[in-house]
Length: 137
Ligand code: CO
Image (cartoon, rainbow, N blue to C red; front, side, top):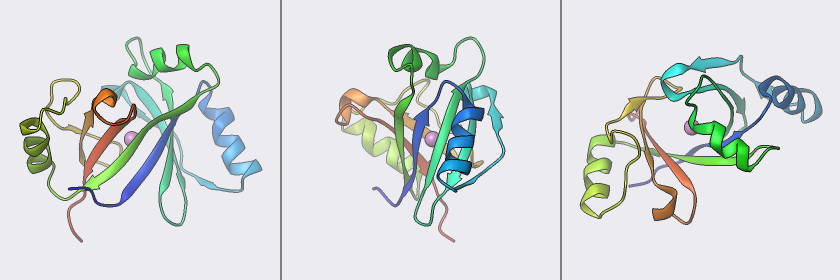
């Protein structure tokens, strides 16, 4: 089911400061911030040769990242994103096996304009998992 690791996401209390550390201290290429109100976050992507790092800052009242930052005030690893070729099939297989899909369970459009779902951390070694559909190129 799983394809490549697409990104590792870090929740951060201050997106501008975190972007600066990656850009200036680590010399990485960092995208402009992108607000995703439907997901309750503002994101930037750090481009690496083999994957990306997503930095997430809470956006709005009910951000899913706010509770995480309350527990981890300096920030920390929030989720891993794996690529799948067919999100509807992946979702059906996972549900048949009893895995829990967060939210309504329906795919939402993620930061790259592709459908995504999130899987419950308790089902996968304590780590929130995002699956993103990558149509074969
Ligand atoms: Co993500």
